[in-house]
Each structure stands twice: as C-alpha cells, then as structure tokens.
Image 1 (cartoon, rainbow, N blue to C red):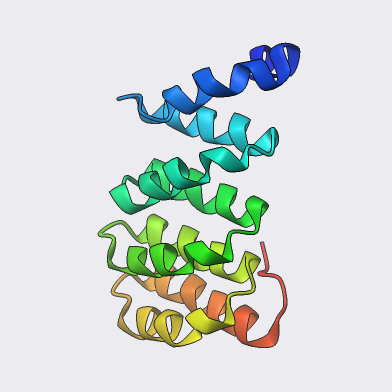
Image 2: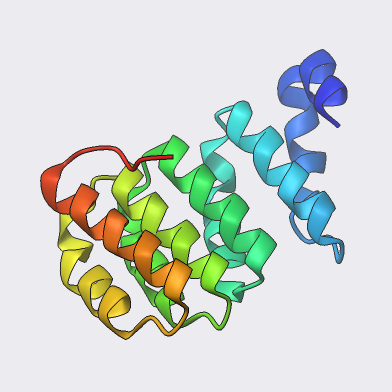
Length: 140
C-alpha cells in the first residue's frame, strides 16, 4: 500500500480514506499510516471515529496519527479511551496525550494511573503522567 500511495500521490487519498471502513484491522491501520504520512487532514474525522470505536489496533493507529497531525481537539476522544478494556489501548492514548502535550488531560491521566489494575500498564501510565506534568518525552 505504501508504494501505491507514493506513486499515485494525492490521487491515492480517496481510496485510502475508504479503506478506513474496512472490516480488516490491519488494512485500517495501514490506511491510517498512509493517510498520516501524506498529511491528509481531511481524514482526521474518520480517524477520530476509529479511535472512538475502541478496537485496540484502531486506538493505536489513530493515537499515533492524531499526534502527528497535532490534533489537540481530539484530547476528549483520547481521554475517553481510558475506559477501554485493553491496557495496551490505555497506554497508547496516554502516550498520545504526552505527544500532544495535552496538559488539560493531567487529571484524567492521574485517575487512570491510580485505578489501573494491570501492574505493567500502571507503571507506564505513571511514566506518562510524570512526562506530561514535566513536559518531557516518555522514555522508550
């Protein structure tokens, strides 16, 4: 898919936008990546909708994309994913909030870290909270 997007340029964007509705999570994630790499801001509403859907792969891809787009208006959608049943999704949105430097999300991130039941996820959420408060990047 990457080579198609590179060769076709802007003409490839509408088909990739349609792929965001695919039933295959891998296809959706690849479409998110291609649209983000192309800087396609028209796809942001559809990417936000995928985030709200809660699928862990969509949350990961959408979180990354929203950071690359600098979409601070998506902070409420990201914060809502702290209720996601998958701890990886919760970490993905915490990392996105740090990437966006969304200080308004500190209270929500603090609550999520305090109530996280999965030990390794609790540690990563605490690291994200510290980084967001200090304005520093997260450690790898």
